[in-house]
Image (cartoon, rainbow, N blue to C red; front, side):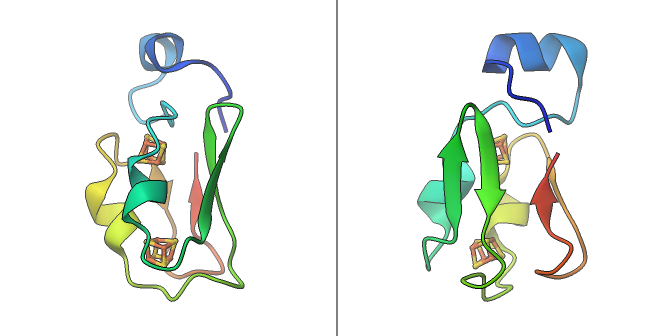
Amino acid sequence: MSHDKGAQARKICKVGCIGCGICAKQCPVDAITMEDNLASIDPQLCTDCGLCVEKCPMKTIKGENKQEREAI
Ligand code: SF4
Ligand code: SF4
């Protein structure tokens, strides 16, 4: 749940969100918003396509389904 900037987040954690925004750009239903260097997924909008999980360069987004999915 890091709010650090990318370089700092990378230093501390190998799987933490670096705030790159790739997931938000890829999401076909705009379910992901970026705030303070952290991606947040709205489960009401998410269609469970899995694209964000696949595209995240840090493998940050976890969760088997949209109820559980979040960026760590
Ligand atoms: S799994 Fe949900 S949040 Fe992720 S890209 Fe697909 S619709 Fe968007
Ligand atoms: S969850 Fe992954 S793709 Fe999305 S902003 Fe964080 S590091 Fe980038």
